[in-house]
Image 1 (cartoon, rainbow, N blue to C red):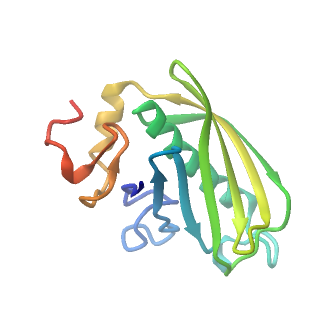
Image 2: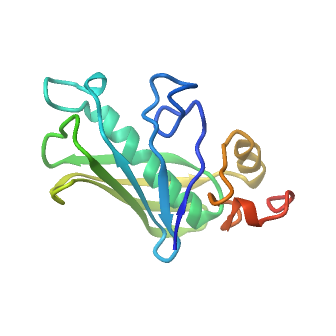
Image 3: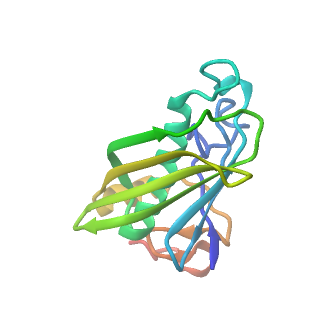
Amino acid sequence: MMRSLPYQPWCPVCGDPNTNPKALGLRFALDEATGTVFGSVRFQAGQLGYAGRVHGGVVAMVLDEAMAWACAFRARSFCTTGELKLKLKAAVPPDQALTVKAWVEEARGPYLRARGELVSAENALLVTASGTFAAMPREESLNLRRFLRFQPQDLDVLTGLPFGEQSPDACQ
């Protein structure tokens, strides 16, 4: 089942543009069966590096965020990035609907290895990414969770339950 994920209003990737005007405003969803995170993105002129090409750092930020959500679901803890690698296969165009997806390949204790992709509407592979992540201590994850904005149907990655179907103290 696909479940939407919450967002942090000030995040440059998933943040609310009304709160953070520079935020991309991406909303991610997670396929609970596979642990794959999906999102749609349409980069704008303000994210260009060279004319007609989205800046690689902006692309990296989006893939990092998607992989971090996949890791958080798998670990039941928010995760920090240890290493991030990208392979830019083609120029990433602005003003086109693109899909980002990410999944965990391996987990060992608190450490996870994830992969991600950015693809065009025609399913052309534009960018691949890989990264290593570390699960945060439970107390730190619970503290960070307070800053997220949830809709009732959003998946709480710390519990694996929809936000509206859990008791208020489900994460403690």
